[in-house]
Length: 303
Image (cartoon, rainbow, N blue to C red; front, top):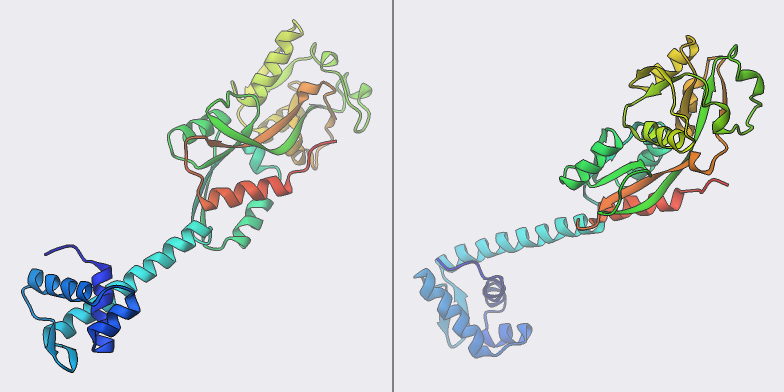
């Protein structure tokens, strides 16, 4: 059987409604002969007669009634499918896969996602927490649509926009020699902390790489007493006196309930950004477009 032809299907229903080849042709804006030819060709392919013809017009046969009802069903399904695709293209339906660092998830991202979810009820959110390097790999491999990561990576293949500014802070126990020189909310020079042992975090992670590069530039590599894999663990080990530590602004809430002393680093490199990244070659879906727009709308640069 020949593939379903929606144009001919509409003509069949018009003929059934009007009972006239001439009126059906007029409503479709085509010649009467073209209508007759389409119906005749269809009857030949199907091997059935769809219409009884007479001087008074045309009327569906029993086979024609069955075919017309099938046409109505298929055309309704096509219309429904068009409506569904319109929802997807407008961003009312779909899915958004996000690969996010822990820094993003401890900053403003949860509230922004709640706002986005309330605004786009038909979008399914898939949120994965991972390191920046793994998040960018997930973009490369098509396992994520958008990544929110720190800014010290190679973004050649990606389109990026700022998401959140995030300064690096030094954290010390209250009885540490550095504590006396730290004033509330006053910046401290990186050189002033370089001689003190530190509690390291996430080997080859973005913060670890940032600090190591800065220390190497200063010609005085950092001395680690131990290394942990999470920021809560870093805070606990600093509390226990194993060394000083470094946190991002987005993780300072972990100091609540402690007596640790902290100060922002003074150097320009210590003011980092979290970025919204997507692969340049990936088509920009409506869900992606609306999320990136929301990120831009709500981003406030640090003063």
